[in-house]
Image 1 (cartoon, helix red, strand yellow):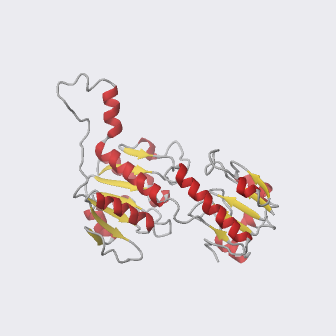
Image 2 (tube, rainbow, N blue to C red):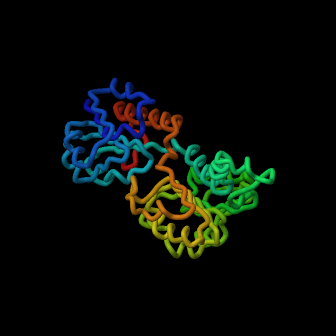
Image 3 (tube, rainbow, N blue to C red):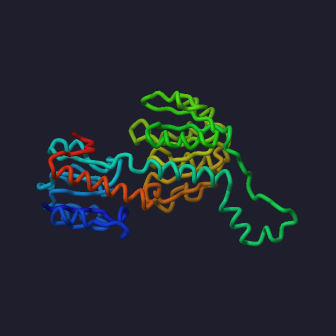
Length: 319
């Protein structure tokens, strides 16, 4: 059994182990693979493991021995699953491994924006408090979350976990989803339309998949329809947000601040307008990167591969 890992480093920069994989067959484990290296590295592989390295139909046509694709991610847009299905190649993903971590980062953004911890800590270390005539001071407006309304676009497991945390802050939660489930156990919650979320929300957090309908969902019109000083959080998929539209909203003051863990292109180009926009907090796609989170991902990946070898494929997205 020949197994090729195309982009191992992001999942395992050295603090996890591939020993379980090496016990299953002849393994080639590459930290990174460029587009022009994929075919050469994977041409003899029975199993290909990939995170963000693209497996298009054109590439898979040149991999005659390929029998199984194991993704290191929940999203599967980097793989042509329809072509894989035609070849009877199962594609497995990693579901529900990062729910807690993503929800945690959502509120890391929200709390940094509303409490400005970094700004005030830096100010203190620069000597501003030492030289202050009063016992306290603040550099930015500070905001209490209690009573504020958070609009959640996409209400799967992550969206629901964000709602749980919001409720702990005594926030009002409104949500829109393609599938409305019973949420009667929640206080201060209601299902809503996207239009009402724009009109009513103090904070809007995106947790929707990337589809033709959600690509560029946040555009100029979206922002114009929002409340003044709205806070935008995106930890879903970068292309859900139009970069220029959000940058314009931030620079005009219509949008108070944004917290983004994903961008349309990753890594971004230097001229991405969000890199220089006002009050824009950007992290390099790290919501999933905590040790515990990656360890959980690795364990599910192991189970996916071993399940395939037993003839009992699991977490497939195309069969």
